[in-house]
Image 1 (spheres, helix red, strand yellow):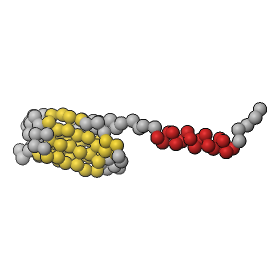
Image 2 (cartoon, rainbow, N blue to C red; image 1 turned 45 degrees about the horizontal axis):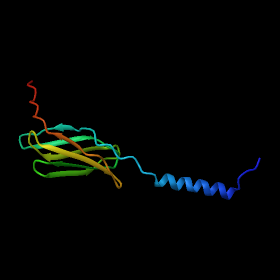
Image 3 (cartoon, one colour; image 1 turned 60 degrees about the horizontal axis):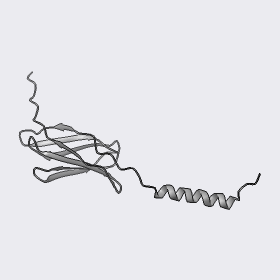
Image 4 (cartoon, rainbow, N blue to C red; image 1 turned 180 degrees about the horizontal axis):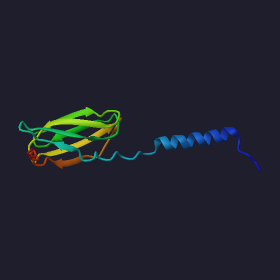
Amino acid sequence: MRTLPRRLLLSVAGALMLGACLAPTLPLPPPAEPSIDGPDENGVTTLSGKVEGGAWVYAINRGSDQGAFEIAGDDGVYSLTLITQEGDRIQMWYTVGSQTSDMLEFEIPSPQPEPEP
């Protein structure tokens, strides 16, 4: 039984690793729908949730074309504050390095009344 020379094995292994590096990566999934707190009497709405740790998270209110962004913590937790009204369409996405997630679009619901004590 003949064995392959070491140089040939290293060349083949290197070519396989290069091919793996050049293979397309899977796209990032859209962020999960966030928890929505608000809008309050001033229109302040907080969107909070979790994405990949250290990702940049973006949200745009399409009703006003105003937005917010921040870097999620190492645990992926984020909290964005926007001025909104009931029914405004919000677009959210995040980036990790040079990859951008698919976009999530949702509507700001009616504020839930505070339960009476």
